Length: 128
Image 1: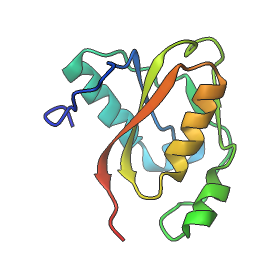
Image 2: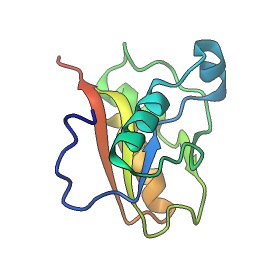
Image 3: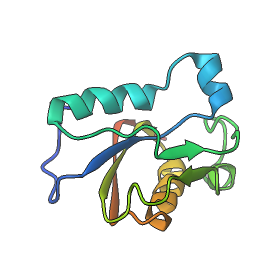
Image 4: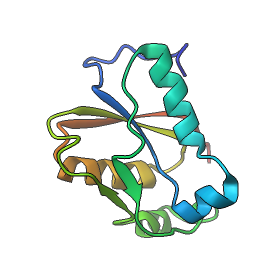
């Protein structure tokens, strides 16, 4: 991801990985988006905040869901710490982009918390 770092029109102030619910994190043992975010942040010199965005409720794995089911599944699944992102340009990091439901839900949460802009950068894009 660092090798293909795009020429962002406006460099983000903060990198935020898509969080896992605490149960899924404990079961898996790691959050792949968090690992990617920290590596990218270190490579491009941008702060990573993996505490500002939280997954408040468990969601079903998205892999076998239709696009509309994915949107419903992650609707209001996130919360953000107020004040931390106010006026900031945020870059969300996730491992795979499929329909954008997770990223859209997380971005909406960050914008409601005061972020100026929210962009996304993913390692891979699923092809249907």
